[in-house]
Image: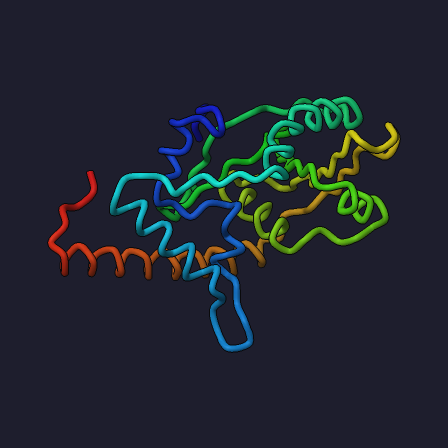
Amino acid sequence: MTDTEQRSEAWFQSRLGRATASRIADVISRTKSGWGAGRANYAAELIAERLTGVTAERFQNAAMQWGTDTEPHARDAYEFYSDNDVELIGLVEHPSIPMTSASPDGLVGNDGLVEFKCPNTSTHIDTLLGKPIDKKYLTQMHWQMACTERQWCDFVSFDPRMPEEMRIRAIRVARDDGRIKELETAVVEFLAELDAKEAELRKHYRMPEAA
């Protein structure tokens, strides 16, 4: 575990070439005919990072910037309504699988995590009315729990544009060891494929090993 501030240059460097929680959904993406394009694209992105030592382009649209800017307010609201303190952390490596990690939005108590989402108002309303959490976010949270060895994660949807009593909804997601085991198996396979492709590229083009 590191205390490097998230989204800092040091944090981006610490994630270089690693499979991270926010992208594990791409690792396991499938279509009816096999692996999804997202898996191949993510593999290529990580291989390029490993070969060049340069982080992938950090694209940020208006919605992503809104989420970044609004997250501190979501954290304040969560702490107030849940009576929990949120401990900010940096990157957490998986305890047994190298080159994969997570950067949760915060630790809660001794056993919990929190994941903040600040979506558009339409999506927030759907969450208020009981729409299930998107599978990609469930995958993200389970990988965070795998890396931190925590027992639950609160999924928090926050929208300050709504009336005060409708601005926040927290849904607790319990650790599922069976699901985590499935994800770990998939990530190990994915990383092995990355290692093999990286080694083949270095051999074929006689590139030096990364420091």
